Image (cartoon, rainbow, N blue to C red; front, side, top):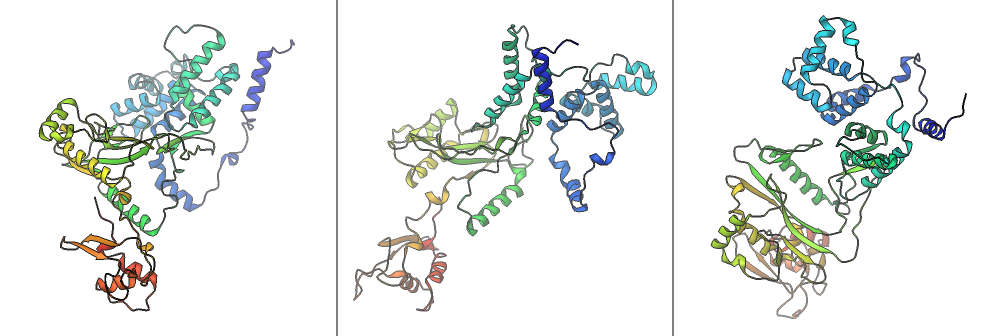
Length: 476
């Protein structure tokens, strides 16, 4: 027997390292069983349907198609769906979505299988694995393709798609063989590339590695977050939403008066902010921290509406807005984007986004909103980024001492009482023996009408006074 060529030896070693030794076909079925508790089984029955994605079914179909005839698989699925009274049209769409034969062809072969000659059904047995796979012949392409996938999965923006991998393999294939591409067909299909990613343990899922709440898990933050999420879920039918499919589409609200959700967002270019979903390879996930260097900050409005992703008028709408509010054309120190309320700032050169700037930005937004034609007959809800920061008092109750003569961050506190009257509370004694000394929280509490003991603790005073208007944050 002649010795193996270098290509054959390389293929053999690649196959040996990639695939584990298959068990004997006659092995007992118990080898494939899994021990599960009744509780686990109950949870699986309840939650399994919600986790199934159409792309998972398509991947399984692609895998089975590589092992047997696509006609057999299509007929099997067609018979099952029709047996459970799934309509012909829905069956056709489902088969096409997962990569099967059309319902017309499948119906023909189903009829042959049930009423015709079985030998005729088996004729022209195309499909199934009859030789070396693509990577058996080109093992070096598998190494390059996996390296490419890992590199793309590590990117900050999760823009990597299976089609990108298919194009990369296609390009490398023609370069390795030194031939010119003469058509638009891919040398390895998108479905096969999706199976490759599964084989390499790459998956696209929710990003749980986001530090948005890191260091801020105080009880009030948790309570407000739960309240906020509950509100959104309770009113889900009012909002425009996006499907979670591989190719997401906008879903129209079921409510008679839809609500457009506008999210105010402050971001810093190259700040390391991450996305809601990301690619994972095995158990490794990229984590991006905020870095230094020159940065550009942007304060803009994201719109949960097909007209998005950013709020902006068109030229006609802007002309109408300017006629009604000529001050929109006034030159200011703020860098507004054209026809919008978006502000950009170069950190170190432009002023930071403080309360006054954000309030001016929202005034501009409210002027522009009424001229957006696509928003007519809609309710508008706005989520404000850093709302507590932009509406916070310039002091904290924790900065005050208990008794007179102790620490005090401000000379006076100006607040609006329950009947919308502006009040001023002096934090230092204005007369008497203690003139010029700070009052402290105890004296302030007594002045505001609280009945407290002189022996009460500082923490008790803080809790008591934090509910008063003078120490509450104002709202935008």
